[in-house]
Amino acid sequence: MARNPLRTSRALLVVLCALAMVLAPTAAHAAPRVLIRSLAFNLCGVMCSKGSMAPAAYTLKQITRRSIDVASLQEVCYSQYRYIKDRLPRGYSAVFTATKTLETCNNHDKKHGKRYGIALIVRGSMIGSRHVKVLPSGRHAVGMYARVKGVELFATSVHNATSVALGNEEDLASLYDWLRTQSGPVISAGDYNAFLDQPGVARFKTYFTDADHADNEITFNPYGGRKIDYIFTSPHFTGATGDTLYTPASDHRIYVGSAWL
Image (cartoon, rainbow, N blue to C red; front, side, top):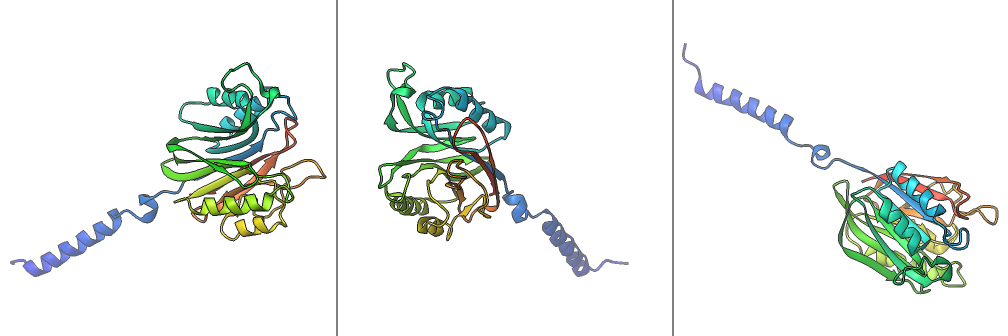
């Protein structure tokens, strides 16, 4: 009996459509999500340790053992930063910006030995050059665009003024506006020196999510324990979580977080 060509063509079309549905990449296959692990830590590198390498060694251990992707460091001597940077495994990018010069930081390096400031370390490749934001109080934020685990993001390390009287709210407002102008996913971490009840923090939370979204972690030990450090992520991230680790190396606790991108 002769086959019906039309029926055969239709059957073949059905089979091909079914195969196309099976083989077509879904959104998950096309863009798998990755877990970005972060760390914020004010090393108190002069006041607490007088420029010793002890807090640097401890920080390096936390970064490598916890497979941290974005590490934001504050109050770090250049010599401490260099200690960490020189011992990181291959594949990390790091930037430093000095905020002042301190005799306690002197390691007899004629170019950088007395410099003191903030640093940002990313497990990935930096795109372009570093970005430095001078805040209204004269404090700084340093950032970079980077490719981490196959995705591009903008990361920053922050150290705002220490009180509202010294310009903390102005720093928060300037920092918020700066971060909102960056393209793509943003993660901004560090010593914001800001309490939870401040208007500037409330404004940040209208757009960004802190890793400790329950606001029950202590990041600064004095005065009975306060939260003044944050790990903020833009809405591109989901599932943010955070925790703190006490260390006698600093008056701050190490603040670790993670979120899916």
